Length: 260
Image 1 (cartoon, one colour):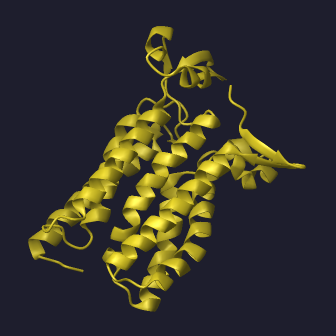
Image 2 (cartoon, one colour):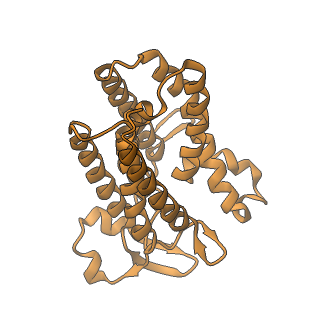
Image 3 (cartoon, one colour):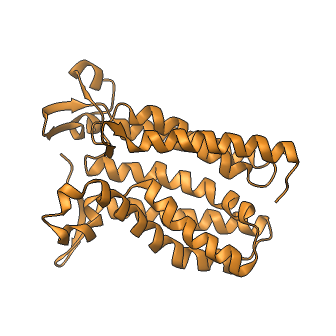
């Protein structure tokens, strides 16, 4: 098993998970500001959004995770703030960030769809990077697999995917890897798509929701550490809702010829 601590500065531990998340955030900010300049949208708006939106997204992602895993934290409430241990749910992060974005959009009178189009590619790229933090923490893994199956992956993945949990010690399907690769492919597709003439405002964000949710639905099906609502995987429920919503909005907005 890989050491989750990247390095230490005196008594301070810097974990790989935090480094991956920080890298994703920094890269996302750079890409978003570059695209904002290309679209002639105020950099100040995005800087303000990042200032307030990133903390809100992290808080939202953590609270969402803790809510559906309350049995793990009810007896140890001090661990709720221990995000370096992992446990950030993307859907909660999106909710937190969107709430801040909606307030800023109304206050600054900026076009909502233009803004989310700028944010969608950095967001999905951040997910691709962040999954490697899950890898280090042995999160987002799948069902038990055979040694023959896991042997097709690099040795460092094989070693890290030998996991002991409540069902025993087994090699696990590297669901984090499938998610990371899928998110990277979606990012590349969005970068290609946003240069096309037939694209209208809002398309990039809606295609992001559609593609991410489609991949998440299937990948979630092999995970064994999903957040659950009774017998149902919460991420799969939300994925279906977001797929239908994004499809309907894409069809409606193109049919109406909406531009903003």
